[in-house]
Amino acid sequence: MTLQEVLSAIHPADAAARQAALDHWSTVAHPLHSLGLLEDAVVRIAAVQGTADVRIDKRVVVAMCADNGVVAEGVTQTGQEITAMVCEGMNRGNSSVCCMARVADARVIPVDIGVAVPVEGENILQRNIRRGTGNLAVESAMTREECERAILTGVEIVRDLAQEGCKLIVTGEMGIGNTTTSAAVTAVLLGQDVEAVTGRGAGLSSEGLRRKVDAIRRGIAVNRPDPADPVDVLSKVGGLDIAGLTGVYLGGALYHVPVLIDGLISSVAALAAYRLCPAARDAMIATHASNEPAGQLVLRALELEPVVYGHLCLGEGTGAITLVPLLDMALALYREMSSFQEFNMDAYVPLT
Image (cartoon, rainbow, N blue to C red; front, side, top):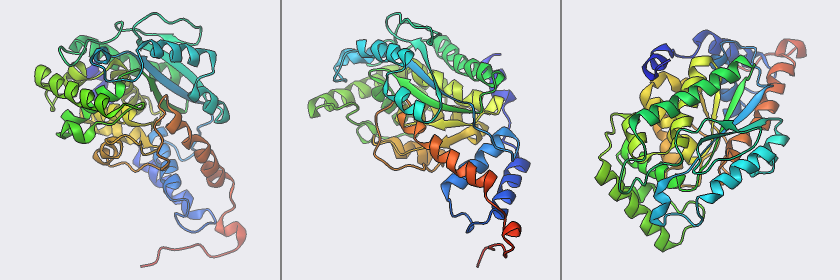
């Protein structure tokens, strides 16, 4: 499928399934909406899956790994060799998200969509578009064609996972320099001042932060990305990891698999997907509020409220995976709790 065909094939989530899930919650013997955002998440999943019989027993972390040429501007504390190291660590199962995913009974799939050097491992999906992007401060990060290929790669990964019976996707990423690309995309798509949306990432000094802001400003001036065209923005000042995740959100909406938004990088990809296709937002669930300056700003633009407020900013999908056990507990109540009728008690009713 072409990108335009993907966008044309996405439809809003199932309103009948959403209502059926709401109706079921009203029969569960508990104070109305007393699980708050967890109840809302279950209802949202029902609408995406098209059934009130919500299942998330087979879940996967899709971690897009890619390098960013803008590291040449001194915007990071470490070199881009760390991207390959962590990607291969994900393959071995000893990265941060892998440790947490084992607790959540989730499989982790690292995807080489743009790592600067070849990475090896039987669990790594080899989907490399190019060996790292260009330096956005002086040139386009990638071509438009490369960006569209990265987006479609994300869509195709979701298609394959859906065919395997996957019921829930957790987004993750790894790419040194990707808080720089995320801040750049945020500044353009939301019309914000660069300094207001740019943070220290993985521990930048004040001088490093100054270089980071300057690099983004130069990149926007040089590339002149069109805020009305998300593909143009991603290709000029974004990254391959963000583009790939954009495709994951579109694929989730297309193939009826709910997708958990992680932190800033993942949120920015969700925003790009939403701008490409507003109906794609129906498949998105906000998990946590990133500690990066633009984190909550992007979620507000998506009109999504995160469940977890923990000042998390580790990346890899670690924030999003924290929601999975909470969803399991909410679903245990949704499926197993006795009804008001079984308790022989009057149901709670909304009070005005």
